[in-house]
Image 1 (cartoon, rainbow, N blue to C red):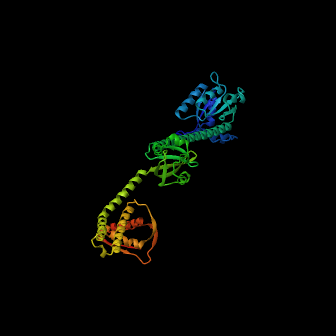
Image 2 (cartoon, one colour):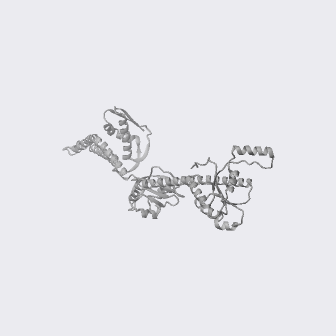
Image 3 (tube, rainbow, N blue to C red):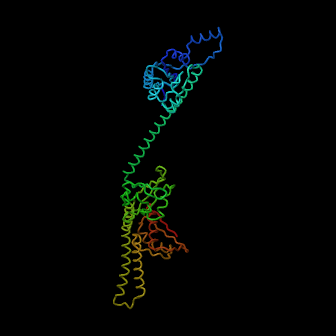
Length: 453
């Protein structure tokens, strides 16, 4: 805030019922005219003398001959924004207010006005003035008759004091305005955050870092967790068992943690679990370190993804159906043919052992096809055992060739020392099948698909 009158000479008000006193103050405190300076120089040259020439800054001086008149001048100066800096006030000014009463009224509208009480009498003691004004730091007493230098020193010192006080007040006003503006902006920001926090469709909760206590939550989080806002505020996240395990909750209540997309299980009030993804952001509420926890419920999304994967598997099974049906028909033809021979009229001429071996091999091959289908559709219980990967790939070659189509040449290479692993046969077959299908999809124009172990 700037003062429009800061470049002008300071204003001084002389309050005295004696006109000659006003003239004396003007000579001492007013600016020298060119004629006055010339006459002083001539006088000094002609008569000499000991007078010391005092530099003058030229105060603006106004006069009032009664206390009421002075009060009106001060009020007008304050209203115009060009207040008086200093007032020299005589004690005795009959018939109206005396100097003490005048200052009492003037300070009501201009409390920072510096004042000098001019007196040649003991009308009021210093104790009396202290009782009337209190411990005023803007009041001095000047005994009559006074010296020119004494008046000048008082005027310059008190004017400078007033100026510094004024600058400090203006600066404090600026600071106060800045504080109010910043406080208003902070309140507006907090209000915007509060509205966004409450209305957000995303579940949000604010936790204390020291003990995981719930400071606030929005309606979306209350609905997801199945707890009312009042229940959440009374307890900590650990008390409510919001997270599925201690391992999940430990990083969430850390004051330095900034998590992004952490998978977790959220325990609802009815004991059910929801699969969620958590993100956290540290913040401070006053002097309390807290965490804003952002919760994304992905339970339904995971269910849909699982259903989609199952549908994709069934689509692959559908494409495999033709080849598998053809293979089953071949196996059934072997079984039916051998059984028919065993049931013929002259079974004595047949190698019954060989026929039974062929029937067993065909039935085992059919069981292998069934197991592969169940494993691929994730419906079979896992049965880990030691498997030779090379032998498994060789057994799958015929089925895989039918699966990828005639445009592809499937080559299986298995060394003499092929790797053996402990795994579920159906699961391992599914891995090989997926690799072959991925290779097929990467070559839309056909080509050679090679598997080696």
